[in-house]
Length: 123
Image (spheres, rainbow, N blue to C red):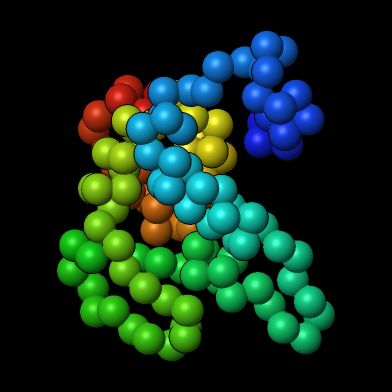
């Protein structure tokens, strides 16, 4: 919406200044927005959303259990790096929305976050 508003106001006086996050890493910001849009597309009755399935099922690379590839959309990511990045970017609405989505839809992320002893960094 901010980009659309900038187009309407031609980047003029009425627009609010761009947050520091968007100025430093516009590619990361746009990538996060794309991920959120793709993961929140509605499922068709005969074909579920593969992006949502991937977000709901990814696992920690440091997990001691064996990685099963029963889900074709499954992948692994370092949860410590993800947690640190989300803690650093909590001023961003996009990062907060991603955190909310992961906590509600991915049981692996929820378990990891609840097991952390430094939860105050996130809050």
